[in-house]
Structures are given as structure tokens and as C-alpha cells.
Length: 503
Image (cartoon, rainbow, N blue to C red; front, side, top):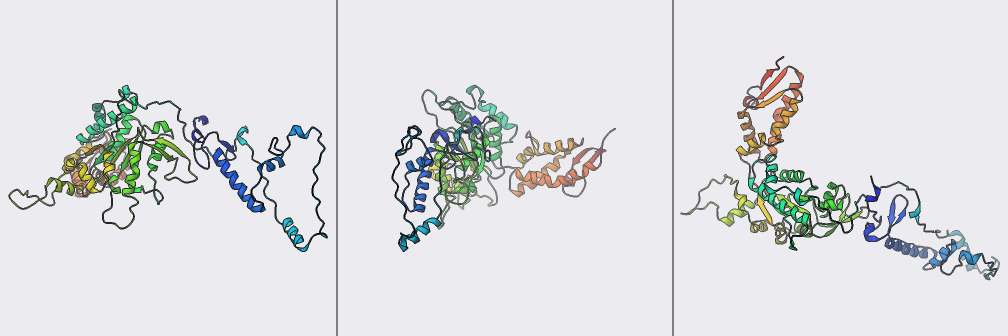
């Protein structure tokens, strides 16, 4: 690894060398800037003055004491070699017999008290070896006056190409995939060109709403994999106001910096996905301090807008032992997602769709769920939910994902490129066994998943439960060639269909 590619950081104030100036190297791979060295000297000076009871120390005399040439008030080496034999008359010490009783006691105390430490500041930067007890903070240097976009304009996929690649992994959600494809395409065009005919192009930050398990996080992960840009996925529930237990707001960027191998220039063009964003909504009717609600929203404003942020490297909060580096969030794409439970009622009240009695009343089953109600969401509904207007205003692209029904559950089981059925088929294929599912069995799995109300995540848990016995028993018999999962087997009224291998 090229060590020159990393920037030195002061071990006290954590400023990089590009900000603090030339650093002095100390043992154990520590570095000290000129400002911190001055403050340390002042502190030592005051402490030594207190120990000796003589006030501040004249450092010119101290340096002269150790033979520092050219120190103030002392003779240089050349002057000492000229043969100047003049000697200063020193006061003669009194013998113990000539001293008064109080002077004798003071003299004894001076002999017992240890002398102050003898200090000599040595510049260790010129030493040809490294002590090697600690590593340098791994922060990649930013080239001065140089800007290299991660994606050139010709390499950015068109929106329809991005959507086609998303279709391979995500079933349904056509509107959401279209909005994300356009927003990402426009954002990276902005990053690649920096400006277009001197017109400043604003960021396309996004806010996704959707029930749990509908594919919000999966869409973002797939998007970053397609574009091959750094991605940081974080959870808003761990964020707290600065000074309280939990992650600082800057930890969002720390994860992005780690995903970019501590390359600041690369991280400044990445994607940050903040999940569970609805959990930092303003708390209603609370008397306690809201350290993980509105205050976190206000702290995120500068990140979403674009500013220079001091980011802790390799930690979730700033402290004296953690180095920091500066990151600019102007070209970072922020995507926020959340389930926003209860916002459906806010939307219904606005649209006046609630059931009521009268000639114009709409008789509806109270247990009936409208899976498309989130598509009618507006910023007014999000503000009533508890998000401050300044926060919502910095997320111009607001869209909702559809809830999953039985047909979508069946498609999720079979169609995606890495569908869960294909994963199990691949696992048994390694044992030279073919795995098949009857349509009735898949319908039963989809029905059970809908009852759990946890979205597509329920499919995995249900299928894992059913497949434990199959995955345990099949490797026992090397003659099995095909296994077909039936509805009777899932209902525990029968067994799977097994065909032996033809020789």
C-alpha cells in the first residue's frame, strides 16, 4: 500500500496536514501540529512554574542550559570557543552555621523536594525509521484543484436501461422504479458535468414511503450495484442529538467513507440510504426532551442541502481519540425511506374517503385495506405525520411503493434473478438433485405470508421452515434425482413427490 496516498492527521486536534500545516512526527506514529505543540508547551510551562514556585519559566535559559546554540541570552558555540575567560561572580553559599533556624528548615526542604523535569524537545521528523506501534489514520488525500467524477457522462445508463436492470431483481413497483431511474440519472449527470451552461442544478434527494417488506432497501442496494458507486445504508433509529448516547448525525457519512475505502473524493459522489426515517418524526404530546426526533431532523438539514462536514473516521461519534476529515455533501445523493405507519389515516382524512352515513357516504368494510392509498401522499400529509417542513423541502422526489398482494407474492417467489426458490434450487443442484414446486404449494406460501403482514420477508421465513426437513433428509440418499414440493406436504397431510435418479 502506498503510504504517501494517505494524509497525516494531528493526534490532538485531529486536523489533517492540509489544514494544520506541517506536522511534527513523534514516537508511536503520532503527529503534532504547531498550534497543539504551542499549547502543550504553555501547559508544561505553567505546570513547571507551579512545581518550582517560581512562576513562568524563561525558555531561553532552559534551552541554553542544554546547549542549544543561538538561544536568547546564551552564547553560541562560536562565542564559547573564542577563549573568553571572563567569569561571572556567583554569590557564595552560606554554611549551615551561619543560617538562621527558619533558613535551615527551608534549605532542608529544598534538598528533599525533587527538581523539575528536564525537558528537551527533539524534532523526530528527520529520523529514518518508524516506531510502528500504531497505524496512521487511513484518510486518502484529496487532490488539490482536481475533480474526477466516478461516472463519465457517456457511462451513465439511460433511465430506461436502469429500470430494465432493476426489473431483473425487483418485481412490480413500476412507478417507484421509474422515479428512481430518472432521479439517479439526473443526479449523476449533474455530478459528471458540475454545471450545465452555468445553470446550477439542484440535487434529486428522494423520500420513499411504503409498508414493511415491500422492497425499499432492496431497490437502493440494487441501484448502487448497477451504478457501481459507494453506498451506505444506515438506520435513523440510532441517531441522536449531539452529546447524547447514540450515533452522531455525522456517522451517516462515516459509513459512506468506509464503503469508499476511506477515499474522500470517491465518497463525496456516493449514495446514502437512511432507513426508518419516520422514526425521527416529532413526538406528539411529550414532556421529555426529544433527542432523537425533531433535533435529528434539523441536524440532517445541512447534510441534505450540501455542506462541508467534519466526519469521524472509523467511529460513530466524535471524540478525542478519533481522527476526523472534511467531506462535502453537495454531490452525495440522499435517499430516505420509511413505512410511516398511520399516515394512511391522515391521507384518508384529507381525501375525505372515510366511511360515513348519508346519501354520498361510501360504505366500506372497516377491515378492508386500500393498498394504493399511499400513492396519494403529499408533503402536507408528511408534515402532519411529524416531519418538519425544512426537512421535507430538501427531499423533492416523494413517492410511495405499493403494498404486496397475493399475485405479487407469487411473482416474488419465482421471477427475480435471485428469487428465493432459485436459491434453494441452486443449493440442491449442488447435490445433483432437482427441486420443483407445485402451483398449489406456492399459493399456500403466499397466503401465509400475507397473514404475517411483514411483506416479502415473510416468504423467506415460511419457506425456510418448510424446507428444513427436505434439506436434512435429501443428502442421506444419493439415489434421489427430483423432489417436488406439494400442498399436502406443506399442510402436513402428505409428503413430497420423490423420483429416483435414472442410471
